[in-house]
Image (cartoon, rainbow, N blue to C red; front, top):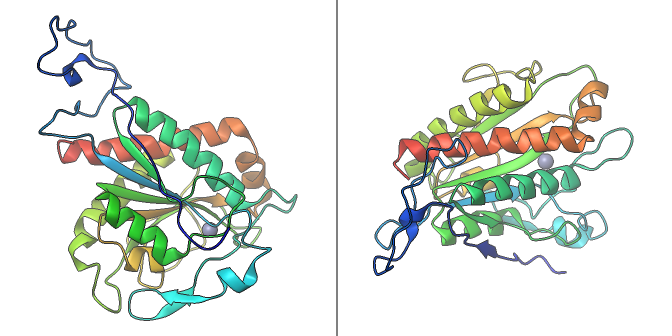
Length: 270
Ligand SMILES: [Zn+2]
């Protein structure tokens, strides 16, 4: 597969009766409160919010260096189209982790009435390039984009962190910095609460513990909708490698992400 984005958009009807068409003859009883339904039901005037989930890297990247090494716009400079990502010492790759967590997160969010768009629809292709991933979010009119990664730091390093955009060298993301900061803090809180992981202990120049602000990442520089990037764990740390390799942890990680997304959407009445 060439470096071309595959847009996978799925709208799933919410599980509350308020989304019934106005002409429905017999309205169902009002829904009871549920912890799983925290996003307002869509109507013709208030469509379901769109959230883009961006699982980092892709399974075919390593075998296609000529594609992923090609330079693409990155917000005032150029970067490679994509990278291969990291892996645990046992060989569990970041791209597989990110894709699995993205699918789990999408499932949770759709059940809460959110329209979810993934930047890639399998874990065997190449790319999409980082600029194409940002373009998917822009085209989708995303209320929020979350890029899902896991880090490959020193073996002794622990913890997760969230990256929010700093002003890109070309200034193009200025309009989304404030909202991205709010979203990043929501993700930081929810992911830590869900997983119990510590905030990363190996980063400098922090906005607050576990939160960094960067202008060298193409996806955040090219963001035209609120965006944040999650480094879920350090895959090179033995303890965290065991966690990310465990499907139960990935389910928990997805819940942490979905809860952060839901909290952010609720702030805007979405
Ligand atoms: Zn990554």
